[in-house]
Length: 364
Image 1 (tube, helix red, strand yellow):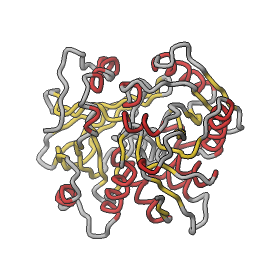
Image 2: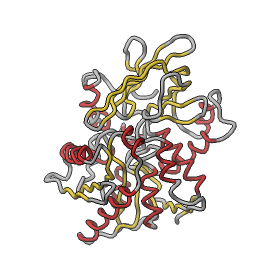
Image 3: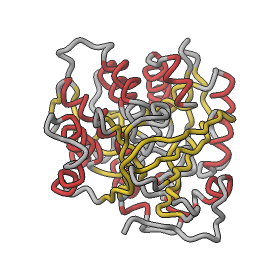
Image 4: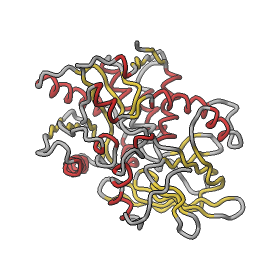
């Protein structure tokens, strides 16, 4: 049955989730701010999916908006309010909620459901809705495996709750429009919940075991003997399929905030003067070489590590002059089991000059 994690275990999860967040999902610092709201003896109960009752339901909790806005303003009450709002909607329809789960990976958005779970006395499930971070509702495992987005619940810091029931429960684009509109109205930062899921739903669509994987990688990153020169070997020992594309320094970052998203390019220069560019929209989307050739494309995970601290970086944390490693990490296989796992990114890739006619570039 459930296992109890302590504060150090949760910190490991925050680090590992940032690693799998692909530059999105919020920063380690924001995740730690939430954790620091509890005392040092904080405990979290984690249940395996196999132990979930067949007739029970789980709800996700996340922060929605600009990573830069969340980093600057902080977060907390929104997470509790949005889960309570979703639980009320569930109760009104005769459904029993027994668990909370994370909708995406990231130092912040994996900590949000943990924060809500501890605050409300509920366990979290050892899984994730995506196994990575995603910039939009429609770029996710749950919509591509036809998990309904109904109801859609959002909450602000004052406890105001907005409940949406889309006409078409699978219309993730319409729900994205609703969610982003509310997000912008509340200053680009809200609590967000949808995809009320059963055990069968998770078995169909979720990245099962992801919380444990994040904890394993986070523990590795935090180990005193983990350095830039042995990180790759340690990841391989843990079964994390990856590739190191570059070691060097961040030469330049261009970023703008538009409609609740951080758009930009991060240019990394190796010691030998070789240049790599990472295109991002909140999350890292493409690694390109100096000639503009795509070397890796979403849904694969593109991660940047600060080699001075061995901390994985969100795109709100990167800065010119940082010493970094650029890694590609294999996304959960469910992303590649259907063409929709790549096609759902087409409209975003087009915005950054990568048309749908261009092929997917998975990690080899």
